[in-house]
Length: 501
View 1 (cartoon, one colour):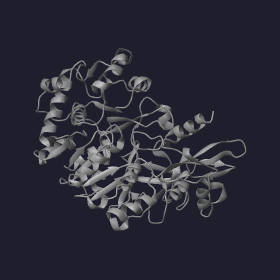
View 2 (cartoon, one colour; view 1 turned 45 degrees about the vertical axis):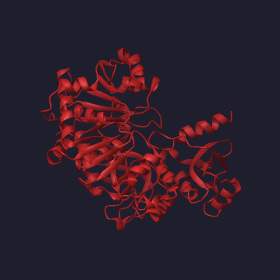
View 3 (cartoon, one colour; view 1 turned 90 degrees about the vertical axis):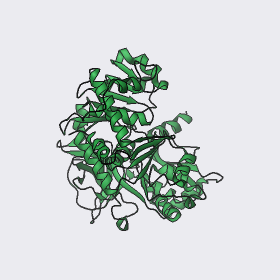
View 4 (tube, helix red, strand yellow; view 1 turned 180 degrees about the horizontal axis):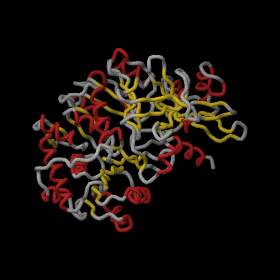
């Protein structure tokens, strides 16, 4: 078994169909498969063995995709790193993952050269590096079949965003990523005529598995952007070059600010949101504006996907992340690992082929992430109804305890998002000598609008228990976010506290 056989199958059936387009360049499935073969055989000639780690540290590109599948075809492990890493954070992850070769771009060359010997990097693949990609391609052969690996062997290592501390290297098996890709393609009714827009980074599970791998397994085409660009996104949609749109909640908020959005949807048939909680109000406004429901699922780097909420659109429930993916199990458990009855809130725990093998070089972290070595602990508080629909209440680590009462930030945020003057918001807990923590909301106003703190409080007092109403409302120009658009609550807390020193 090898994840790269998904590319080989699509190249067999659709050799002349485009697999990726970027900045006027286009590659067919046959051409991508040939290029990946040449990279794989080139790597093997240079001494790369099955199981060796090889890093990718760059922004999205056609070359990134080719190198990724070349690594997999050679039987090696693709360690996918953010192209935004630099300095000590880059050194820490390279030291931890120990890739023999690293594929990168010119802007990262200096950083990587400075740690090359210390971290044991043998070769840097980059213009002006040890050799560039064209040299490796010329060295290889276009005739090659992916090396067979055991289904449980590690295919890729993705690093978590590090929002709760030091990033962890999540080891995903060949079987796990193939299962995830098939599940996504199935639930999205994907086919070879789909055009999937991707501006989310390939080092993240959303970009790499949900968009790239699931599109390739179904024979579709990836319309690639290195990052989110509002004007380019709108242009591609209007030109009919997008049938499937994938984004994080903040992108949908920005698009809803475009006045004539509904008049330029082209061939768009499917919209999906992940990476962070999506407010119900955004789903309702998007449906009213475009006629398309924003589909959601539930998953994470360690377990992708767990649920889907849209295989049958008429059964879509706003506010839910849906029902379990076929072949995946989930239970709601308490803090001692006991299963809770239906309707009670607790931690979502998961079992299935979609679950990671563990964290790289971190046996303690791996052990603490599982109950009884089989049920993965998501860290998310959720609840399931009688029809098997799951609802995310909040992150365990985001719960605010004020005066002994638990406050789930998402509940408060959902209400604040219904206020017309609010563009974005985040509810956090700040230290308080009397209450332990006090509920605080940071709000980004819509352009040209003013937020009055007392109006926010009055609005919430009529809808929430008194202890849930924020004691403080802070107006900010923007909220700190990860490269995938997730609000970094820990960074937001630090920013607020730092400003008050």
